[in-house]
Length: 237
Image (tube, rainbow, N blue to C red; front, side, top):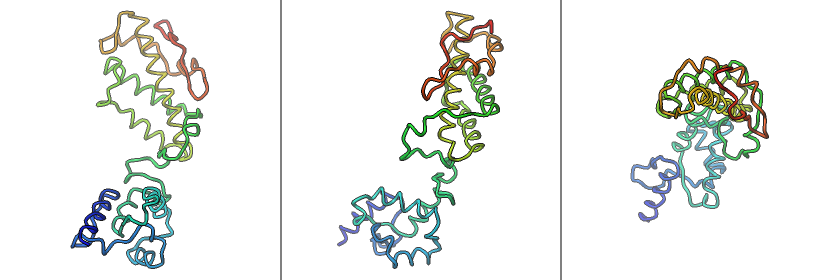
């Protein structure tokens, strides 16, 4: 019997990252995932202060059942594990990882065709992205440096500024603008100095002639992408 308890305890920790609350290390204080909807388990959960009608709770159980699959009858969980998992969701049932993830930005189960769509982006958001791209292009001599970039801050602020249902599509669209702005800067520098290569210093004044308005107006929509024709920008703009 002790061998069985040890195995289930390991599976429990592996699945949910929480040790069994039984001080002996067994599973006596746990219940099967498949039994969560039973009246006895529901009463235990409510007695522990869990609102089993909340979207937060329902989201956790939905994901738990998906993870367990056909093994739900052999997998165990407990009240504390469910409470810990609920901390990763907000009151609307959105996965937030305790605030790290913006609600509506979880892509699980959402087809790419629904996420990768071009929608309208405010001028303010585009301008902030343009300014960040320019600042980082100059600071890193054209290198996309993952260690110093502030692009995530720009995206997060943008995501929080729009409706939850538009956040995945809006992020995809803003990413198209980001790509175009960086390309415009690259093309302008290369036009001014054909021998220039990424990582090498360049005359920063070259970028003064590249405006966000000019880049936006030059973009061409091709399917679910915004494309900037190559060599669109040079120092004469």
